[in-house]
Length: 408
Image 1 (cartoon, rainbow, N blue to C red):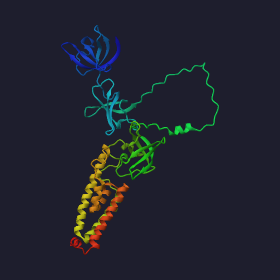
Image 2 (cartoon, rainbow, N blue to C red; image 1 turned 135 degrees about the vertical axis):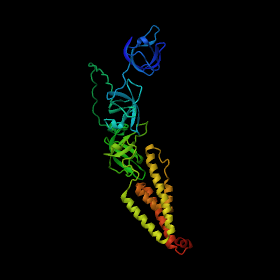
Image 3 (tube, rainbow, N blue to C red; image 1 turned 60 degrees about the horizontal axis):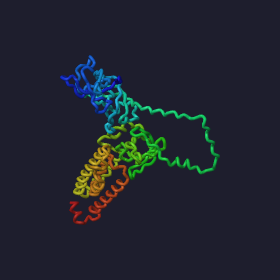
């Protein structure tokens, strides 16, 4: 007879037969016989789905039978319990787990209730916290601690005393290859999904990627899409916080999200640190707006028709830049690359047609396309070409019939 306490779920109970079956947590899919005489006095009417505790014994037909079956008490609010984390959603910064005994309903955990904000729990880890009832009726764990697993102690290896130690070899002058071999060893993998600190050691703004030097002198790759800002670009020597992905095979680790030191609260938020609909860059907005307005007034002086065309194409350019900015913010969190983005070629084409004043205003209003050097260089080339064409039509070839029509 097994006096150990087991836990399980009542799968069936037949009232007329006064017997049923239990699915034990410790015996896989094997069903355990449950009969009326094996029930405790305070538990006489089992129902399917009940969580019970019981001990085991074998009957005369070598069948496993439950004994001293009793209903487990329900979860109580404000009691401290332990759960095993089943799933954690990094984007939503939350997950759920299962109680070690009461497995009927999931218990949810939110990242904001973790006592250690520098650590993300992993699936299968044990969490301990205080149980509360949410307004939607679900159980929620607060004041959560992550229970670290203690490593198993290494067995003591006896050292025979009667075996003398081998004599040391005589010293020789050899090349220090050991140190060279140590220097060529691959660095240890960084802990995944844990907040780490470092400094941006290298940044290529043209290609949009760089490397972060960690405290233990490891270099971690990161892309511009991982930099969790709308109005800022990374710069060398900036202090940052980040978390890495889990190493897969021989692929190097990379930083999945990077924020400046002091902005760690937004590291696990969906929205960038400086997110809002209008991300004004006031200095650029004033400069670009003044330049575009003066140019439009000058064109209107020579040709109201051309000025009206500039206004129409500028409105179209403003709408394209706004759409591209909103798509860029959305797709950066869903990791879908450039899916749905407005191609840069189209942005340059609308600017070349005369929409560059509206593009300037949109770049200042949304702080979009203001840091990529290759885009800025081509943008101003298209502006110069457009101004040269307009100058030729309205001033240089002023006697041309087309120019006369535009001026009329």
